[in-house]
Image 1 (cartoon, helix red, strand yellow):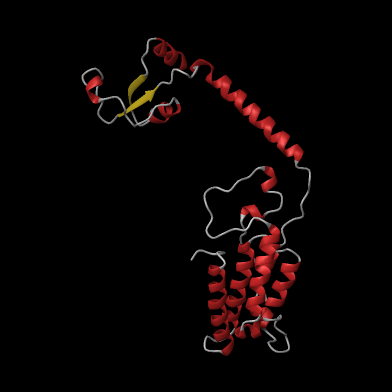
Image 2 (image 1 turned 90 degrees about the vertical axis):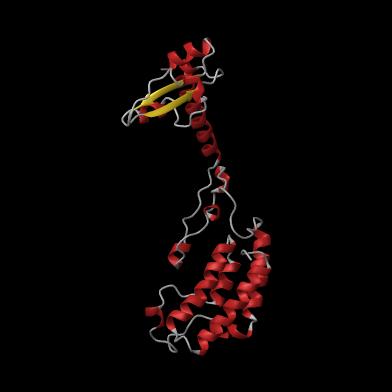
Length: 243
């Protein structure tokens, strides 16, 4: 097929047309054929036989492509890419510790938050929702100020420290992944929150745990609703989530 393509290029014939039955469509696709026909119908009507149940396919030839050398070129490209990857991997020698956040109940984290990922050359596809602060110090300062405002809110008092077993004996049997504002403060100091999403996830879990354990009409749930409304307002105000 590649020899046939080069022969036609020499004679300035840059389009192939063929009718393919259902078993041949896959083969012709691999050869560069498409169901998208660009050749005007007036140019081939009456010159190519129309087969019932078959699909008309077209292949547009590119004069700049040496088709008979194509497999060799692709093989060479793969070898070059492989060497570039090996060279990049050789530059990245640092070994990072495993992720511990999943043990704390976090179900997913942004790929870019995994230590060492960005050093490999990985880049995110598309745009993420919300504003992601790439500077670790800027993120730390932003989250520190936000957490301070949340802790000073009048409805934050039930969530300031871990729940005591003496006050709720079965709490840790019901709530699998407990979290509180004191623990969040400690996590912030240890630079656990490498992205805003981890921080927001813990805030959401504070509220979710409260609603799971306490009756909907309880004072605790009323505090949870008030605090939730407040921190979402602050997150939007700071551009940390979409408005």
